Length: 174
Image 1 (cartoon, rainbow, N blue to C red):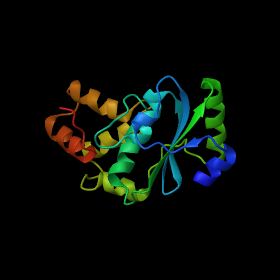
Image 2 (image 1 turned 90 degrees about the horizontal axis):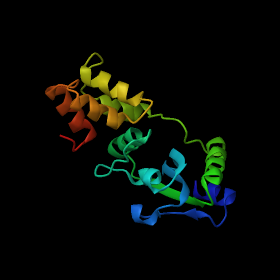
Image 3 (image 1 turned 45 degrees about the vertical axis):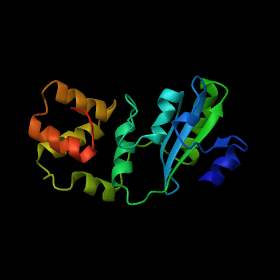
């Protein structure tokens, strides 16, 4: 992946080590890969780009792919995640670079492998509320994690279902 990115954008590819490497008020194209396959390719400022560092302690709120990143981090057998940034002149350049990368490397789909889906649903029967809640969150046109938390606040998710979902996704929300 790094070679492809470097070939497309020589001398522009950064490999950040932490959120601190993502500067505020700059536009980026951000890329998170697992085993050289893109999970997320997006654009934006620090508040969106930090998703490439989401883990069990960090959730990027209101990001469409935050649930997917969390699930990959929790259930992937591999730990070969790589984070990349391309600093952009402005939002327009970021949009153009993102669109080109989607065509060349992908990263615009919200897909989970069969292996990861199996682990996500493990122990939840097909007709269980937990299974339904996870499927609804994955289909969200917003942020599935935020949806789950809202359903809890609104008492749509009762204690037993909430505890199972919270445990499975390792959420710290009450």
